[in-house]
Image (cartoon, rainbow, N blue to C red; front, side, top):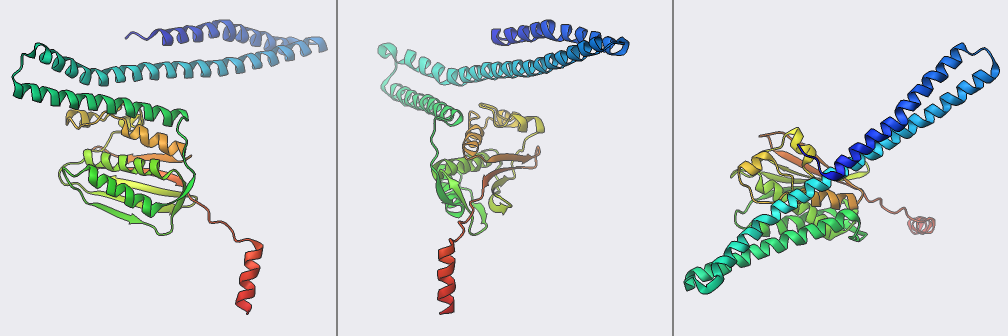
Amino acid sequence: MRFPPAIVNLRRAQLTLMLAVLIPTVLMAALGIVLVVLGNSMPTVIASVLILTLCTTGITGYILGTILVGKGASYARLQNDFLSSVSHELRTPLTSINLLLASLEGNRLDPADRERALALLTQENARLEALVNRLIELTKLETGGHVFARAVVDVAGLIDEATAAFQVASLTRPTAVAVSVEPGLTVVGDRGTLVSAVVNLLTNAWKYTDDDKQITVRATASKRWVEIAVTDNGIGMSKAEQRLAFTRFARAKKAVDRKTPGVGLGLAFVRAIVRGHRGKVTIDSAVGRGTTMTIKLRRRRKPRPSAAAATARQAAAAA
């Protein structure tokens, strides 16, 4: 397996760090221990303590440097995987567009075939544009380029809006969604992006279930959190697939085998939106047993009444 140059350079930096820092530090530490054991004078003991202190500092620096270099290697690997995935996803519509353009050159097609080729060309162009726009939007969400609104959001209304948008998106195979919402739940956030997050979860649940689709949405309070859970009876995910589920372009093996449409960006959107609200998103799934995706958002605390308002209420009650 060949690693990209960035990862190779980072691995070399890690090896250099080990040779330049760790080995000399270990040798000095051994010398310091020998001096502590064999030393019989105050200057020798002081020198050995200073050597051991210096070695401790060096080992700490090596550990921190190794962590930083390891993170750099991980980021380089993610960047390489992302570029590879983007190239693959862009290649398909671009190949189709090139083939259609080649067939249209020179007016070699009859009018009926020409109309079909033009329709397919428009379709592939729209597909390519949608993919690029989604990538741009996701990048803004993940890098802080999107400014989230901070308004009070009624959770029941949020779920009603999300389910209505989902029903429009799934008109080809209408599916009833069972909704259960604890009354009085509110959060502070960007209503539009939160609706998009729930719609993405509903769409995933719809795509990765068979004909007997059973999808539920529940919203409950759990201590300081509001939990919005979307449950389906679909194909489920293995533990390994769950660890990669929120990675861009990651798709479950069964989804690929079933040729389920999609490019693997939906859950990355959900995670970016939830993180933008300082929340959490979790997965509870097993292969063949369905999936529950849960969004956890901080519960809005009701403002405490002021002392003047409390006094006024007491006076009104006494009157």
